[in-house]
Image 1: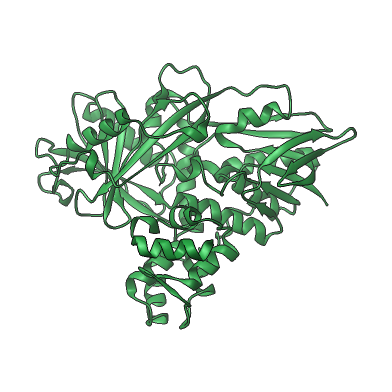
Image 2: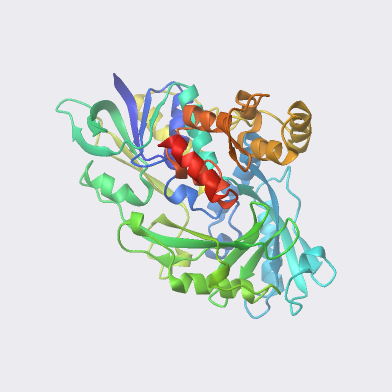
Length: 478
């Protein structure tokens, strides 16, 4: 079989392009060396946002595009994406109040808001968000963005791509690629040869390395490491905080998996193989201090339950500092008519779908087709409902034999797809609410092969289950 497209890379951009292309009728093959979302796409800040701080750098087009996408993604994936209120305590020495208010006014009006509330000013001494917070802070501002289960977003795009005819192969890395004498490409992967008319290079932080195998045209990246820590819950309430730092960076803190607080991210220039990135002691100290400066509950390194680090492949725009490098993206065409190659450079999880549309615009031109995208109107798997609270009530009544907490977890992770495996016969119970039926579903429908695929990327069960449950799951997968 000769595919129209061979996509290299199973992150959010690669799977987003695969979904859009398959929905337009292209024959699509996607190859990923490890698991889907195993690198940058599962190590994001887990926010669907316009990027308030990008306004300081004049990134108005990117912010407007991202703000529009909040509404689209909320609509097509209401199970894994939901509104989140952010609290921005005012620190006069860093940014004057008028600057913050002007930025929030722009943020509210650069794109139409249909779902999320407008920004407002609050008094932390009177507002619930001030509980557990340093009393030295009085004035704060609130605004809304969205939370996303990032790695699940990637998997759902891959699932929908398969539904429309794509072939997705994780743990199947490209070993070599050869430009055929006449037209097209031969790709060796997993001990097999595949053929495609066009290569889509969506290899994330490895995009420049893959490019070297395709064309002599170089791609210039700036790799930036972002690290995060997970600690026991520092405060009550559903809101998130934006913590302004003396270096003019911001650090997020928000509720995570019910019992924890997530703190991140850092921005550190990275050199070397992205696969080797890991949090440094300096990054731990930076994030701990950011939290200890504002929360009354103090934490130390011994409180860190988990860390994760991602390397963001950013366009090299010549910025002096990592925090100022553009988060915009670029689509690079090369190879000519006989050996076309499209490479994706940069980007952020919020704009993956519009990036995919722009990539398909170039792909359409190459194949001389004019098929429009349907990704904005088509729910992702499990997202075919309107209101999550109503859906949860319905599912809790439908599966009354399961605990309400378990039904809520299923509803948040799988949406209506939970109906594919929920029943009165859930199979073996491995412990801690983990049943055989769910594991079967993940292996048969969501490309899960390893323990980490299940416990970290398809879920965050690793934070909740006992060693005994983990061992039983490992035996199951052995």
